[in-house]
Image 1 (cartoon, protein in one colour):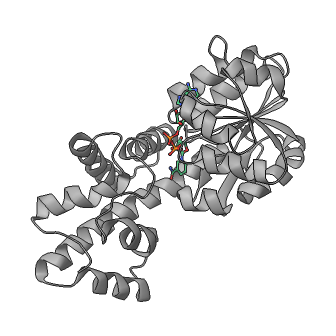
Image 2 (tube, protein in one colour):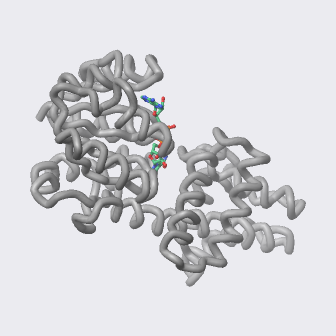
Length: 295
Ligand code: NAD
């Protein structure tokens, strides 16, 4: 199939590469010229703008940082909405349900169908094709695109209601952010008492405290002190901002989320939006006056 891909970042590049490797012809655009050049070197077609992609293919995938950027790329002047050929917009960024509903409605008014399909599983999952792909879309469009989404990960159709997949994604990321925040505090407590950090991780991962931070983020990026997992503090905090909006909108009190949200904002202030999200452990370490490192 001929497809477009906009946003060749940490997640977009490996996802687009999987479509390319599966034999699809991919026309790609990113604001960063070097990312497009690296992708073209793998056999893709490069484009010079969003509109150029939307003028050349019927199906466009996007993996972009924030709701504001997704709105601009989808419905701004010279956005996807202005394309002459595009029929389907497969949106894999995390934007929250409000943006998905509004962007989907604007595109629908111009005959373009939105396939809301955020993903979870990090850069490693994007590279291996093992992401959780959450989809809300009209059933017929989902059926058409399922073989492509299968290249990207395990596909879950959550319903036809616009934005529902975004809510699913925020539910997941709230838990992921909470696990990383809480595990950082728990590990700092143990380390300050004199426990060995690697030993603590082994115990937790054999016991009932295990979670995605203790199993993956600590061993890979915090215990070795590399802080290079591949997701930014800015984007993690954005997901919690969106979760807070969603909980207010739906009238669901979330007191644990409030505490977690505050800790992520403190990390954002200290480490900056571009820092890796595993630096939340560094913030907790500094507050506690202890390091959580493998010997
Ligand atoms: P990233 O910042 O690495 O990549 C975003 C890419 O979009 C960059 O290459 C950037 O140059 C490009 N871009 C920005 N504005 C653009 C524009 N106007 N036109 C074209 N390209 C533009 O971000 P990421 O980590 O790949 O995340 C992308 C999305 O996926 C986010 O919504 C994020 O929340 C979500 N997500 C990330 C992860 C992860 O582990 N990194 C996991 C699941 C979901």
